[in-house]
Length: 406
Image 1: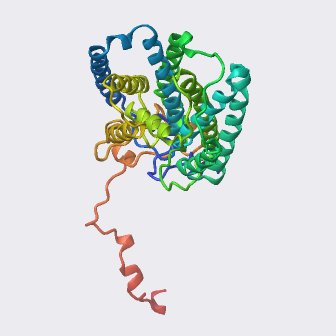
Image 2: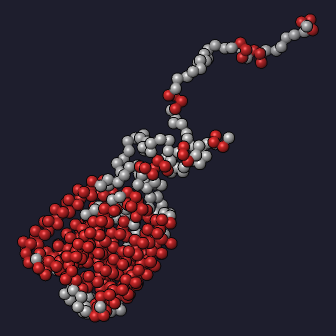
């Protein structure tokens, strides 16, 4: 009969031999995940340390130059936080999707140069063409990453080279045209960045959302494709990160006191990626904190303001490199203490209550020790007693008879 077929309509199994229906309830990645759920305690502890560091740097700035935290200087600082924050959000979005976008710095600088040239036409007239070009460029980058299934850093580095060629067409700094002053709305810009950063962290802490966004993260062979859903989410993340980079570049240009100088822009990429790693986002993708990005960006921006108050000349490359180095250490902490707790030896992952498979087919398999749970109802045969009817002599001895026996 059909229902007697072993494994009929049975759910698929992973390489560990555990049914997928069970893994859906205990694994972050049902196909190749680790038993258990990601731990958030490491992010809470690290974000508390970031808050302490931000308070310390702010106190140093206030002691050196109290005017930097009031009036117009404070508005300038808030816009600086918002501009760097948009670049950090762009880096964080692509990192969460496990396809880091290294082109965000050159894109931001190209947008700053464009806005400096076209700002006199109006903010909307100057911004809309840049956003359209950024969306198309991000889409081209996304197609290269998900169709060819190549690392995001490699494809975005090639895209960054193309943007740098566009930047190098200008040989002199460009004075910002127009009268747009983001300091008039500094508080709104800062609150908007903070809200997006925190809400993104909160949504990223939800298991289905985190698993969906980080689905492109390799779990076995990095060259193996992760499916259409992973490709779609990663493509959207790359497009979004490119658009955010344009917005950040416009704020940086409009908030500056001098002209926008042509450069590679890769120093902005290093600084933004370092800030998001310092905030607790893993360099491998998927894992990240809640308030870490906001605290890390504020710490870096206040430190740069404190360096200016100290009359220090610090290269953005130096700050970005130091931040990136510290962020890599944070990644190691996050991946070590944020992964699920190791299961004890011989432990079986807890599945859903009930049989879990009877509703999908007749693949119900008894547990290995089910037969030992019931006492035997048949007499146990004594192996030392030989039944005469089963004696070997009936088969081995010759039959003796003659005609007289009839």
